[in-house]
Length: 199
Picture (tube, rainbow, N blue to C red):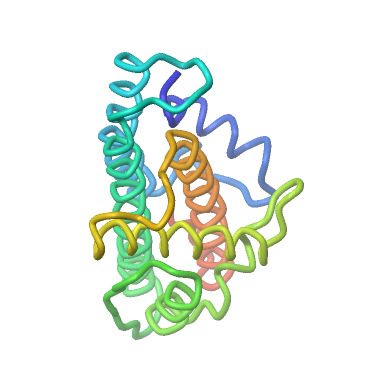
């Protein structure tokens, strides 16, 4: 089983989990690109599984795959946030008054909050990041810890702690949920603001 479910499974999950609705049954273009970008992460974890198996215990010599998966998942999340903000801006330009664009450097919660506030006027997108047994505050803290880990890997070449396959898998699952919640929240807010759904 790959890190992310197939597109139809994602749509079914979105419909079941979220109070927000997906008009027309399709997620944003940004979410579709995110799913595509996650293919490399899935492949790394598949390689890990193929070479080291799924059994418990430390697999020597495979941590580089786990580190790579964390870095790539963080890059996919960062790209998604920039893409959905740009997609929302385009939507607002076509259906409302002025909007501006800003680049995202490190995709931590505070920076994402600022990106959406400054780019499309949504003051607290991270407030939508909650689900059963996960508050928005917990989701934000978890994201920030993973992004910090990515920074440790990317800037120091070695993370302070061993990176396990479960770290990469859990980060992928967490970011997938953040993308689902962000997509639905932005669509809901844009439809409320201009009477037309983003997707």
